[in-house]
Length: 377
Image (cartoon, rainbow, N blue to C red):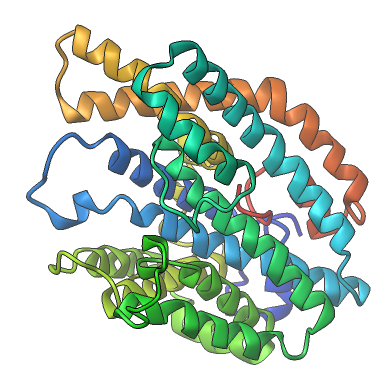
């Protein structure tokens, strides 16, 4: 079964486990990256609280990533009886490292040639970005966007190894880790000099996605969620729940409001994968949404580079509109991401097939640059 279309008879866990692609998730990725671009290109305050919270797009991306990574690993374990860390890390290396270090190289060369006031902050930040620890320190330049990439990389290092070495204890350990990750957001541990990252989102949304993967991998857990979310309008209701949670009137979303947002995002992801045919399919599966979701990693990497050029161009043209700037930078970063994906990333990604288990497995689907059951980019 290529797309795992839901049976009219109702939820079927075996059908879910055989689903090779989740057709709506690239559309959700597109929403998350567009929200982040809006956040980074906004030029002024807005009357609507949610319009100033595009940073929550990263949280949605994290929930999707945690869910997909662990779903892939659990299915590999179910199929072969074990998890190959060598294959997992090889695939992640091929997907993440080449474009990431290309971006850092371009930034380094550009800043060195331009020099000026941007040189010192980038020189300060570059070592942390190179080592994927930028979420642990105070960054001074636009390389601070690498904090989310560092968070994902640290997640990749820890969670698969835990699943490989301590599968039985993993659900409990990761549940405790999720709880601990949220404690600093309540203002606890004030005496510790924790980076601001730990007092905002931390690893919480990724671990929420991980726990969702465990629930849906279990027949009873899947059955409970499916009965709750089986209606074709469930994703619409879940999306409304995310919007409502993200519109919380408090200026600071730390603590319970942020947890509520993450839970709503997990419900949205679950509603979109528990059955393939639902009311949001026409939107989430539309070509622009799927394509933006496919190259979303590149868009995130390059959007702060295009930001500078688009800013100069729009100001010289006298176009001070925030909407014009947002649209222009979105299109520019999308174009650069497409060029990178076509001419640089795709040849590297072709090597992922060497670390796939076979053409009929979820890993084979993950090795191809298509929508669905693959690690978040």
